[in-house]
Amino acid sequence: MARLTAPISVLAHDRFDYPLPEGHRFPLGRYRMLREAIQDDPRLSVRESRAARDGELALVHSARYLARATGGTLGRRERAALGLPWSAQLVERARRSVGATIEAADAALEGGVAVNLGGGTHHAFPDAGRGYCMFNDVVCAIRTLRASGAVGRVLVVDLDVHQGDGTNACLSADARSVTASVNGGRNYPFRRVPGDVEVDLPDGAGDEAYLAAVRDVLDAGLARGRPELCFYLAGADPYAGDRLGRLGVSAEGLTRRDRCVRDALEGAGVPVCVVLAGGYAEPISDTVAINARTIGVFTGSVAGG
Image 1 (tube, rainbow, N blue to C red):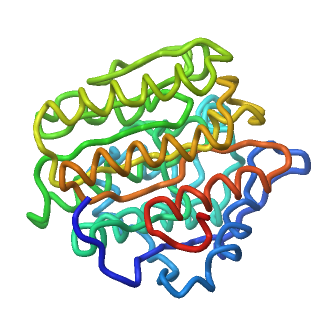
Image 2: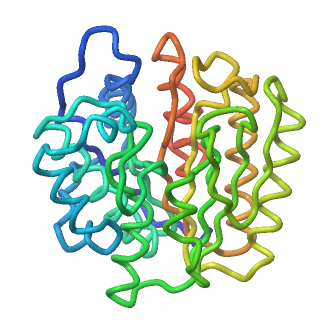
């Protein structure tokens, strides 16, 4: 990574809550719990993110989709694919998530590393939201930064257990972007969109097979040309205790993964915008602890241990 400057920017948006039915499996409370766990660390500057602007969303998403998504006129199948009940509060939260990644990416270019305490909404396509993802924050950030001339070549390292099908679709014709991912091979999504560098692993792969795959995709992704910025989707869902993950990776294995990513980017001199993507452990506190350690690995904060 580029040389770090302190305090390190951390963007939050958990105050913008939205209603979920009782028993819904999306762990909305994890974001507030994480912010509360790290907000007093003097090495971090935790602040509330702005909302993404209409023009920033339109750099990725079609006008027809944006009208339906923001106006509450998604069809029945669209709502089912999104997996979250529509509300005006959900739209505002989705805008804040995108805004947080744009701000964090800009801060990473200045300071070497920055964090969005959320984001990683990699199942959102130009014309559809899927898998709890309404808007694609990383691709919106890439195109917003490019529009201002702030960045050219980018690397997206996606280590959420679920393939980033929406991100792959958005960037498939983008010669200045490389996507590198390690996926659960038999996990969601079941209709894949090929990325640039991918490894699919079987259920129960465990730490060593997982870490070997991470090293392979990092090496291959960086070998395609030195990026000016990396977006790292630090999914907590490969964890053995995750309800949706199934890869059987230990919490320590995920910390080793984060160090591997950090060291590879540091060696290449690439700044990094960290977004947190998925995490569905029960109890939620397990996901929060994994996320806090990720932040600590990249920022040197006390929260990471």
